[in-house]
Length: 396
Image 1: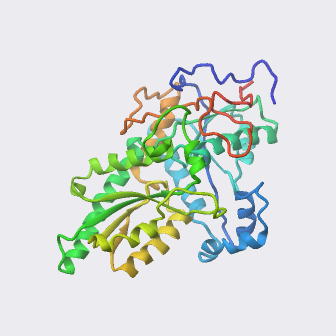
Image 2: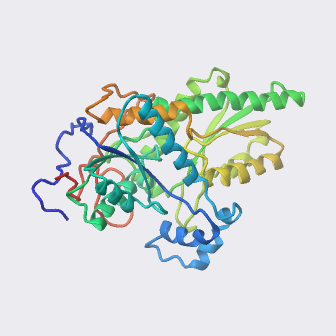
Image 3: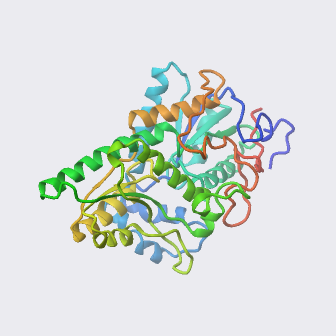
């Protein structure tokens, strides 16, 4: 750990609500999950994802079929390259001179290598934008831990300052692409039903997100706060879904639900439910004829969208005779890219945006994670971008 007196004080410039004063950042880091880009990458990638859990390669091979079915290639890296380019273009359009670097938690380019690249290029204060919008261990705190561990690994602790933008689940830039998608999805499904002679048949709107262990959900967000659904993670999704529906007149009166997907791990550990395929099975008995699937928990069309939704869930819909469509993720939608740059500008001295829009009562979320927020799964690790930070990240 850094003991230098000049190391970053996580309390400096932070108010009681976790809002940080603007700083003169000199680069942006796009931080993401990462994914394999060939068959030979699949098992090494899954080892990285499950590191520390002692899972043998034989078990990893059993769960690799999603990637194997797509030639061992996850779409996420290509999508992040496209998002990086879109961010660079939007920054340039606004005349903002901030380079965009890219680093992954589980596959090349790794975060530690990106931090080395940033430091070698002369950067001393970087602001991270992650591709996770919600609050829980894997969506927020694990990024902060990986940043902290990368600084220690590279010897940049106390030399490179790393902060992170707020979780943006209810930022207009994230919500508005889903508003557009739900409206278009309803039109598509209702047109299909009309062609079958059922123009007034009920259509269900199903918001899907990644399932996580119930214990992780309950540990998400600040302690001592009561959230709808029992956790910040569930409450944020419910509130964002409602924000989308409130902005789609065509959705008035439609039934909707929040469902989960992509469960993994030991079967004896309870995870958030219902699973999307189980929920779909119940719709025909209710008289539902069509479904609009909204990947509300996801920023881009990565593997857990193209497999769990486009392959498995839509196949379930076909077997049940449901007219169905899947709404696009934000990806490089213009409003999403603009929103991410707005989030950067909230935190910068130059080109500062003082207003912090939020479309739910839960937001705007804090810039800096407060103590006991999104507890660690397996013991404490060094973190950055939080009051509980244990890594000195001040620029020298």
